[in-house]
Image (cartoon, rainbow, N blue to C red; front, side):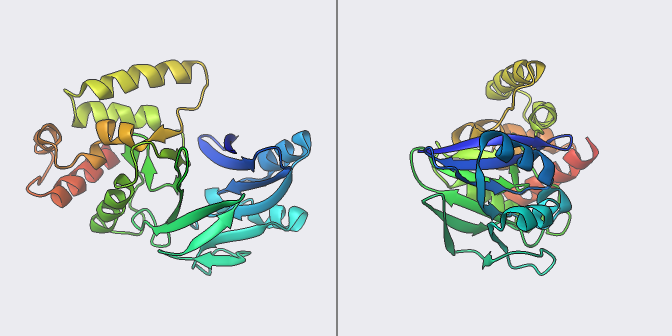
Length: 255
C-alpha cells in the first residue's frame, strides 16, 4: 500500500512524501526546502531513497543539494540543465519506478516549459502535478502559452475520475473564490467553498482533490460550460474553449 503524506513548507507549499507499506525507504516530490524533510525523516527513522521533480522553480528544487549531500537519493526530473543533481531525466511518454510503482510521465507545459507530471494507476490512481493543476485552479503562465496550458489541463482531465490530485500548493480557498465568480451558479463550487473553509479553519490540508471533483468545480476544466462562458464573456473573448481559457487565466491574474 502506497501512502502519501504532506510536508508543509514555506507559506503554502506541500512536499509530498511517498511510503510503501512499512518500508523505511521513502520518496519526496518537489522538495523546495530540505529542513522540513530532514526533520520528518530523522523523527520517524526513514531513509530518503528517491526524489521526483516536476519543474525547475526554486520552491520545488531548492532543497535538492542538501538532500543529495545528506542521503544520496535517486533523483528523477525533467530534461532541464537548470536543475542540477538529476540522475534520471524523463520526458513525455517515459515511465519510472518509485516505491514499487510504475509512474507514467506526462509533459504538461504552461506554467513552465519543462513541467512534467507523474501518474500511477492503482486503487486509487495518483497524480503528482506540481503547479500545473491546482484544486479549483491552474498555475500561472510564467513561460508557456495559454494554448500549451489548456492542452496540458485537457490531458490531465482525461485521467480517471478517482485519480487523487496532489498539487504542490495550498491555493484551494483563493481558487474557489475565483471559481465563485467564474461559475457563479454552480452548487458544487458553493459546497466546495464551505468544505474548504472548514478545513482551513482547522488548519487541515485541502489536498488531495480528485479529478471527478475538479471537473465539477474547476473553471479551467469547464471552458465549454455555458455558465462559465457567460461569466467570462464580460472579461474577454469566449468564442472557443481556448479563448475562454485564455480569458479566464487573464481574469484570474488580476482577480
